[in-house]
Length: 203
Image (cartoon, rainbow, N blue to C red):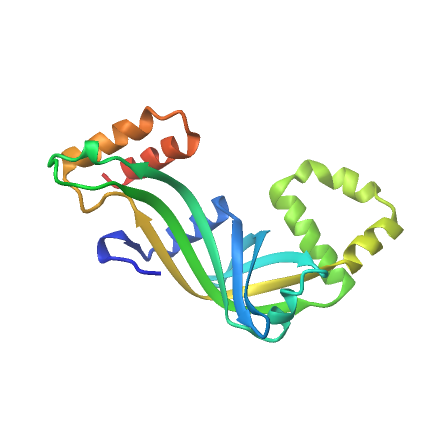
């Protein structure tokens, strides 16, 4: 990912927190079948200053074979983003742009082959996204659970490299940043208003 120095974010806690809050990612690889990308929810955990990403995909999705083969993986997490009008700038000779936050993570996967391991991944996912579902999960029949588990591939990825790009008008004047924040705050789009909050944290 191309990252000018003024947009680059390297703080571990900032990047980890971002992934936790924007955990629906895109896992990408290049294997015998060409470039593949799968959209998945992840659980991000910190272990000894390392980030471990856990998820699962359908066994019918042959992308998991790249993971099993040890392919280099890119997992993309994207946050709020919005169009920036040149009307916010002090000089008329300007063009539109786009503000956004994205974190790219790199690593290799470890397939979790056991039924018990797959169950642990599913329950970890339930714990993150809907703890109230645990009761219903526990009431599902063993046959139903077994059938479902046979149809997935669970895995975890140790992140070996992270790149964070927080493109929030850091290279603009204070007045221009104020104009952009005000414009975003007036938007009817929740993501655009969220981006305004992110900009205010850095001003």
